[in-house]
Amino acid sequence: MISVPTSDDPRHLDAVCVGETMVMVTPTPGGRLDAESTFVLRAGGAESNVAMFLAALGHRAAWASRVGADPLGDLVVSQVAEVGVDTSLVEVDPTRPTAVYLKDPGPDGTRVYYYRRGSAAAGMDRAYADRIAEVPAPVLHLSGITPALSETCRDLVDQLITSRPAGRRLISFDVNFRPALWTGDEAAELLRLARLADVVFVGLDEAARLWDVHTPEQVRDLLGASGTLVVKNGAVDAVAFHDGGTTTVPARRVEVVEPVGAGDAFAAGWLSGALRGLDQTARLRLGHLVATAALGSVGDFASLPPVETICAELGTTSDVWHGTDRPAATRA
Image (cartoon, rainbow, N blue to C red; front, side):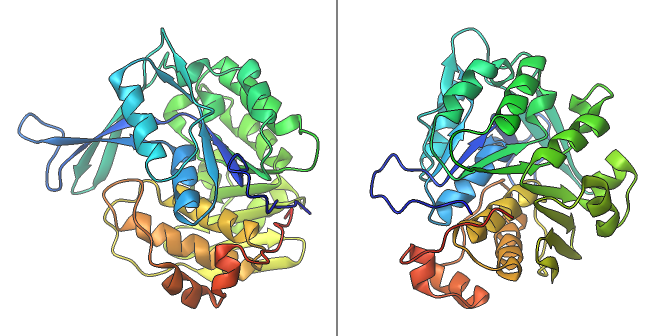
């Protein structure tokens, strides 16, 4: 059992999400990556997406990373902070730049171009991991993107995921496989990290590419039975394997505007349900609900329905939502 403190101390956090956030350059709707289009700059990063959705869901979430001493770094930090995320753990690197990526929407989907090698976040290391580990929070969220950024980032993730601070902390790990970042050892390394986490999120499609497994049950057999495994099967369903058995919830029907960020939104919804002590079905339903909002937005982050609508969808009371007598999060 992981306790969720009810302290009024403003420094108390429910979750710390660690990883790189870049400046996302996106053409305005209908545009392409060309000289004729206008563009919008937005913060974009898997772990900060999770933190932002957790904040939108009423939690005290922090995002931890490094940015460059440049206007892009200022933009990233301000946009993440403006939705209520704690950015006090973010460090500014005076020599490395803030990373950038560009989206090119097309009739066959969106192509993404990354410019992140040698970025400020790629300089995160074990010393930074030690600083993060000192922050009390019942949930620490990581992804498979960070260990692919650099050797020091791999050390950081290894330190955080294997060296638990005093007290039990739930380690959440989203596989988030990015083929372009890896150099050939991704299958073994991501499998190792996933087996060490308490909660693992993985898409069935990425599991097939990484480990040549093609059903949720095969993913479960590969990772082992410890903790909770959530396998996302796109527009079909999501399956959770846990101590109490197996829970499956169909995906919600939605017109997809942009799929990027939906997996992060799903993870935030599930983690919010865990922090509130909701059952496995409600956690998956909340994951789908938050992912639906992301799928309907051109950006990675999107506004959520009113609390009353969410509570009605989940069959929960507003007391649970707002924290009154909120149960503790379970470990799996």
